[in-house]
Structures are given as C-alpha cells and as structure tokens.
Image (tube, rainbow, N blue to C red; front, side):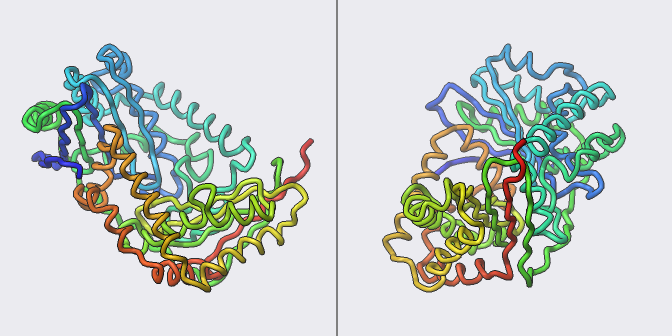
Length: 414
C-alpha cells in the first residue's frame, strides 16, 4: 500500500505528496497531460521536441542543469503518445531548488530561435539515427500507419516525418507550450523525505501564482473496428528476415486490458513462455520472439515480433505462431499456468514500488488515468482474470480480421 496526500492549487495544479522518511532523497515529478496523440497531424513530433526544449533554459533561469548539479540532483524526461514526464531526484535538504527550476519552466520557457534551432537539430539527428539509418528502424512508422486509420496513434512520438520537426517555427512552438504546459494540465508529485505541510508551502510559493491556462479538452477521432487483415511486405538492409504482427486491444482503464496483458505474458513472459519454448527452443524457427503491448491510455496494440533463423521461410514462421495462438483459442489454459504469470506480475509490481522514483512516477500516471488510488488497486484487476477470460479474449483479439502484419525481408546487404 502506497500512502499519499493530495491537494489542488487554485490554478488547477494537482499535487500529490508521498512521505518516506527512510530515505535522505526527494523526487519531484511533473507530468503534463500531453503526448504525441495531441499533435496536429501536419505538425507531429512537437511533444517530443518539447522534452528537449524544456532543458534549454526558462524565462528566469538560463541554465537548467548547472544549479541542479550544484544541489546534488539528477534529472531526466520522457515522452509517449499519451503524456510527457519530467523528474528530478536530489537530496531532500535541497528540495526547494527543484521547485524553483520546475516552476520557472512551467511559467515559461526562454523561447529563442537559437534554442529552437539547437534542439531541432538534436531531434532531427535522433530521427535519422534511430528511425531512418538503423536496421528495422522504420518498422513502427509503417506498422502504426498500417494498424490505425483515424486515431493519432498512427504516428510515433518522434513524429510522422522528419520535415515536421525541421520546419517547426517559433510561433507554433510557443502556442503548443501555452496550450498544454499549464498548471491546470499538470500533476506534481513530490516523494521522499518530505512532509505534506512543507510541500504545500513550497507549492504555493513557487507554483501558486502561475496563470492557470485553459483546461485542454481532448477530442480525438475514434479508431473504427478493423474488419479485414492488413499485410505489408518490406525489404530492407537488415541482417535477418523479421515478422511483426499486431492486434487491436483495449484502453488502459478497461478491465479487459488486464486480460490482454496476461495473455502477452502467457505467450512471452520469460524463458518458459509458450512462444519461446515452442518456436525458439524446440522448432528453432526464430532466434528471438516476444509478445508485448504498449500500455497506451486509448485502445492500443498487442504485438508479436521475432527475427527468423536464417533459411526459415516466412510462411512457416507465421504458421508456427498461428499454431500457438490456435492452442490458446481452443482450450482454457491450466489454472497453474495462469497463476504463474499472475505471480510474475505481482512480483514485478512490488519490485517497481521499491524505487522512490518509480513510486512518484506511478502516482502521477494513475492520477492522470483518473485517480492516484488506482495504483494500490492495480494487482486486484489482474487477480480477477480467469482462465475463461483468457480463452474468450484470445478468440476476440487474435481474430485474423483484427491483425496487421509486416513481413520484413533482408535485402541486399552491400
């Protein structure tokens, strides 16, 4: 059980405090309710660009990193299709330094052509290195476009195409900031050797007078049900043929999401999982194979992907995967097997809760989902899943009409 206190400032900033006197450290985590799904389809990659711009100096603090290092702190950030998260870990006695830094960049970034130019180049290089020049780097660009027709999950966090970042203008960037990075669109979590009274005083002092901004109301196009399989053949300069299959699953807050998550664990949770045992160890068709999903807030994808052993035919590899899926769809899995994957999930959740940073991060995430208290109820959802649920959802999810397949062939290596 993770204990916390919660309050909201007059400007709409939600604040969660998790007191832990067993550590000398404190974490300050700021989650903004904006991700790649909130971008203009003609200007993608902005949420991720901001992850970089937010470290380029704010209106009163030209250098973000130096004062934090002087206070013995470290920081980082990440962006997903659903959210943007910034976090600082530092000795609790220097807590106010983190409030000073984070509040100033929430107040306003130091927008300049120079800062934008620097970060635009950094992100453009990242795009080229990871998504254009890297083997298989284009897979998820292609897969998202194959799987999604309407929902903005059809582009990746890095952006749909390089030109969107290269052509980002200062005015566009400013308006994106003042639309999304406002107190009423943010969640502040402070965890560690702190008290609620102390955090309340610091929050009022540093964040209280930042203008609230307008609450962002999300109206995204719904993804229609898929009624026919989508298949794409790709040839590229890659070392091995690879097979990627995805299937539409449920939003993060749907109880069926937990069933889908456990199905992915049955198929691919460790060395004794079904796909690894049958297709890597026994039949030696794949050098590696995994099944996972993205945990996205809106309806996401469950993915099976693997690299084929040299000489194995694509249709044989795909048929072997289907045989394992057929087994799931034909018979209820043994209760013992389901209990084993539940135990694995339980120990993983417990392990996550051991880290202060992870606790702070999760409190922010569950508050974004609807209420931080959901963090303490997460395993209950897994416990409710039955072998009948696994059978039923396997038949629904792995319907071939719900599938998207990329056959990635190794082309000319010269």
